[in-house]
Image 1 (cartoon, rainbow, N blue to C red):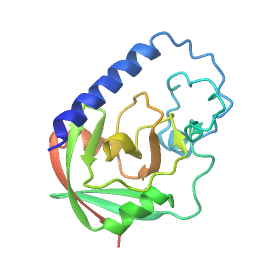
Image 2 (cartoon, rainbow, N blue to C red; image 1 turned 135 degrees about the horizontal axis):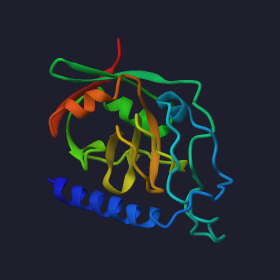
Image 3 (tube, rainbow, N blue to C red; image 1 turned 90 degrees about the vertical axis):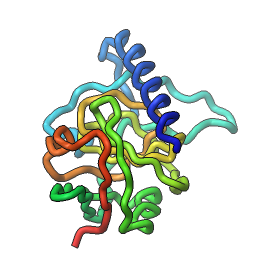
Image 4 (spheres, helix red, strand yellow; image 1 turned 180 degrees about the vertical axis):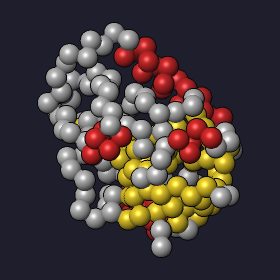
Length: 192
């Protein structure tokens, strides 16, 4: 089971990001920033961690990093996540990573609460992840974290890492995640 390494990796990332963000003044302007629908949908637009400077040119440069998607894709697919009597509504965007997940549905996945800010499930195989990466996560975001092949639901404010791909967003009230057990099995399926 890959849960222990994933929890350790996530804990180290959050600790590192917290340490980095304490020195941030919040005054830096990020030329890659664009408004997000997730920020306006949740009513919060807290600043994220300081963005890294421009990547140095060269053949081994990673894909571009943006703080948010430029715009919400025109095509989205409604899904449900069901655990017992709780039904959570969400939409997935039309990214390749979301399309890969949709091809797996319906599926039952075990999720675990991580640091009281997110639920994570580890997938058996990697999804097609082509970016763009972003670093402006907001409560309600559904993201793919490719180093751990994990599908993650963010439900509290947090900082981010530059290897997340936005897959969609939760459209239900996020308070449901605060009342769920630490370990839960969700049936994820396309909404009818």
